[in-house]
Image (tube, rainbow, N blue to C red; front, side, top):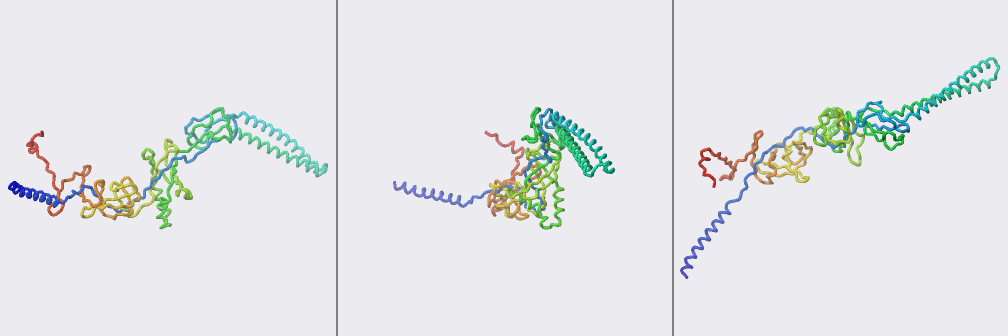
Amino acid sequence: MISSCRTLGPLIMGLTLIVLTACKKEQAVPATNPPVPVTLGSVLQKDVPNHKEWIGNLQGTVTALVKPNVAGNIIQRYYTEGSVVKQGDPLFQIDPAPFQATLDQAKANLSTAIAQETKVQQDFVRAQNLLAGKVISVQEFQNQQQNYQATVSEVAAKQAAVQSAQVNLDFTKVVAPIDGMAGLANYEVGTYVSSSSPQPLTTIVAIDPIKVVFQVGQDDYLSFISQSLKDPSMATEYRKQDESSGMRMLLSDGMTYPQKGVFRAANNQISTQTGSITVEGTFPNPGSLLRPGLFARVQATVGVQKNALVVPIAAVITIQNLHQLAVVGVDNKVTIRNVNLGMTTRDEAVVLSGVCAGEKIVVQGTQKVVDGCMVMPLTTGAGTSPTPAASAVGENGIMQSIPRPSPSPSSAASLPPAR
């Protein structure tokens, strides 16, 4: 028994030394993460047109509410609902019979007044002759003169009554006040309408060109006038430059409207409730295809941002409301920086602070990098995807690329079949 223990003792000690030696070797090899293959870009500094975008809705350049000027029953509708009408085209016919009777009565009264005027005028001429021969007194002559003047005034009043009756008769035919597209009729044939009716007979809107109305925030407005504030003498020139660039419109389905718009007008004050100013633009509308009420996005250029720092939009890392960039140093080490963004487009973003011109940033592969990691820049050809090469750490700690061997037909043929 004693001899067996003496034999197992050295054996156990030897196994313990082997295990300890293996643990020390495992601890001696540090764990290293391979560099992340990414595509890099640079922070550029250039002049950038200050593109802005707002949400607006389409309206007619002129909207006319067609209301009746006289009361009566509608006996006919001339126009087709939703059609284009010209100024003066008949739309509705109100029963003209009562107004025709009033006109006939006014004409008859005018004829009576004219006949009476003729008789009084003859009496007045006779009185003038009698006064010259001192047959009548001055008082009698003045009475004849006043009677004649009253008759002349009566004729004038009857003439005005005839004109008024004629106007009312003409108003029974309701015509289009402007050129435009007529809407649906709010009253059918047989309905009694008047100037106090709650709704207009119909609505006509001029939609070629069509107007887009949108709200511009005070920050955008200040950006628009910033250059003019620095040099008021160039305000008119800057405005002409911005207006010459025109407006673009994107419809609610994302389609870009092919026609170019122009600035029309801006309100004379900024709303204290919303902090914005109402701006209008107009777009050609051939065929009257666009209708009032549509929502659209309006894009316009308001000045140029000088020496702006620009990065590809794909390089921006967005976490909730926080924007970041993965900046790569000369040692290919990544530093995640918080940045403030200005204007953004589909391809680029303007950086207000956080980076400097010329710094390298990660453009593709941002989802793989973290702060402090190492990256391996890739070069990509046109229309090809980057293929990262294998890498290893050399004896001096420098990353070395290991090319992937391409199997030859002979070596491939010599491989044993898979079981």
